[in-house]
Image (cartoon, rainbow, N blue to C red; front, side, top):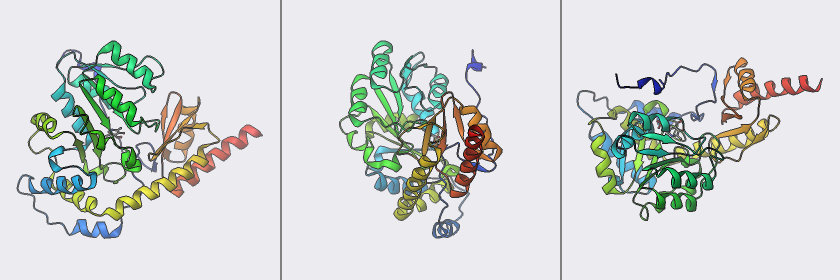
Length: 337
Ligand SMILES: Cc1ncc(COP(=O)(O)O)c(C=O)c1O
């Protein structure tokens, strides 16, 4: 094994029973018309996938308003993070990210033999991030926008300022479909050192397919693509994804559903603590009792994610909300008795 391999934590997935409001997956059921179209896809399993990927790139490029040459497809945006860290970093290169942010950023940095740094305090302010950049001179900065877990949006001005100060910036837009007007996409032509990451795991409701996209300047894609394994995405996944991406009504329906459910959730969670503004499909509530709240909800089979100073709750169904409401009422009536 590599020296110090123990410093890389193992990610052990487990199936979630009940209402999974802990992974920001879509809760909008795939409509029957799409299920039928998917069942009718030809099952051609004996050869390596090529045409399916070409078709998916064409469909997603049209959705995203970019050219297919600006795209790379991965087995989830997770795989693309791993690939781009391998492609960009030499041993001991520094990678910086805000704090809190997506937990996998540090892990992929370490796998690629880089050093991961985050601001010491006030980790979601542009000032702190720029100070960290000034002090640590990172080769790569990774930023999720909207931020996971808080929902905070970085402005395009802030992202452009970062892009001007570092060799490479990744803007991870896993949740941007919920607020597409805030995408960095139209700034790419000005900033050819920026890589956007997208996924079909959230608003598109296709986490099980494992499909993510990298969007960048064609010349940068050409370089990073050398670090991808030959047939990294299954043709079945790509074919199913193409059917779903081509149905433009579906993504609108999903976004409307999640926006309505997020608004309901905001009202529901207000008694727990300060609910941070969010345009994504989740909310972050600041509370010192985060572990206790997560445990209480779990008793009713509702999974939420606890952090040190709050809980992150994905927008869910009315049925899940009924259980959240019951729990909150039980606790507040006990406190008032
Ligand atoms: C900010 C962010 N980036 C990337 C991912 C990975 O998504 P996937 O690998 O399913 O495309 C997630 C998943 O939760 C995320 O929250």
